Length: 297
Image (cartoon, rainbow, N blue to C red):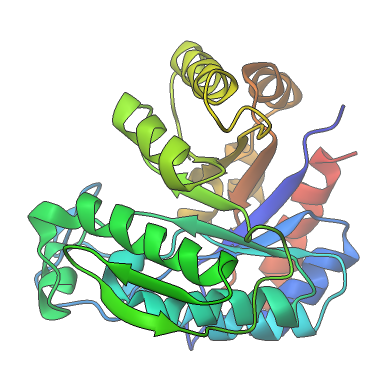
């Protein structure tokens, strides 16, 4: 079976617009479009991969993914849309639950909610989030949002989140909620969180193939032996490599996985691959999307 392939874009106010990205992707039969989230980028931010002072320009100019994905969903009929990743620690659950449910509603049930714990300590500090406790904050906020999505009248009384009995509509089109995918390393604590509040894993490649295979197997075994045995956790692998440094279609083609690599990902249990494409130029974007589409045939 051919592995479904979607695209991820570093969308800013200087790139190709999101409607063009989405419609060009759908016209080529691609699976999905994913956008990342940063509310702002503090001066002095240190990316775990690049260090201080070396952040790409795009990180300073991120467009709000929820608004942009609503536009993408309205302009398409089949393309799935998702966050890679959203940052629930930086939002109040009452507001984010409505954003997510509304986005699922306006896209007719095509939203995948990729969530992460966040890497930018300064960004979180500016938003009043204790960086050292971000995992606990994410877990609690996701439980609170699940209550809002699934209960007619929901309330919550936790360490970080409290709200009285409330109505929160619309409810998501997808039941019991849009698929929640946790972005994180191949570690047991990530699998614990997926089992607790999510529906799948969003690993960021590269990961050693044997480790990827073993982690996917452990994840599905954990679900199979739990009260959530009816759920088969999905795995969407995110590969940033091809699109981040490509300055030409030839650069992009050289960085793409070959057929053997795609087969290896499928054998490892991956359900979908998401490749980053450059969106700084319309012509380059179209050429690289053509290359991605060729992989699906």
